Length: 236
Image 1 (cartoon, rainbow, N blue to C red):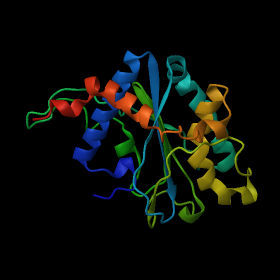
Image 2 (cartoon, rainbow, N blue to C red):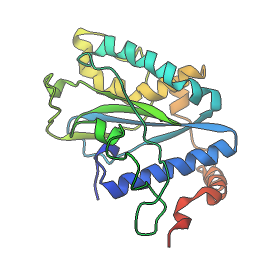
Image 3 (cartoon, rainbow, N blue to C red):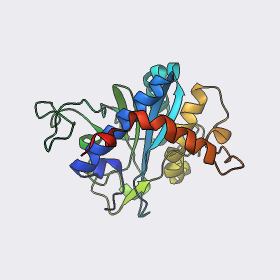
């Protein structure tokens, strides 16, 4: 079924996304890497499908991500305005346990209803930016021009996840007329921040050209490594 953001997924789909994230994290940890997950959901009627980007990074980058993104979000708030909202600390990691029906999943005794996740932290239809690392993450609610500054988050037509393109904190113009480019700014914010952490050019980081074989070799290499960590193989 169609979903415009990860936070709007039904419970079963949300559960599966968390399982995939856990398995991907375990796979990259096995090879000495960290992983960041990023989603950007803009305002306006875009009709896009939900999209979350997985970004393999050095372990130190994942470890330092909370500090870097807290600082980057603070700067972005000053430039673009988020009605004084601070980033919301969330944990979207899958915790294991039983989920009924014989499937390994979230324990019935876990605090799935009270824990703060991106799914229950975002008001329905509200644009947001999300970044997640092992054990935590941030959700930043985004003010857009078509929001009218309201706080109820009841927007007409939630935009789809633009995914991480690459965003620089200097993107767009600050203040005044710069607000009209807020969607473009947030769309690129996550990737540009990650690129900055690693001292890489943001544009090249988010627009790596495909290999001559159309990335076939990379895809086959990933699939080979993924087999050992694919949680769906546990299903009956």
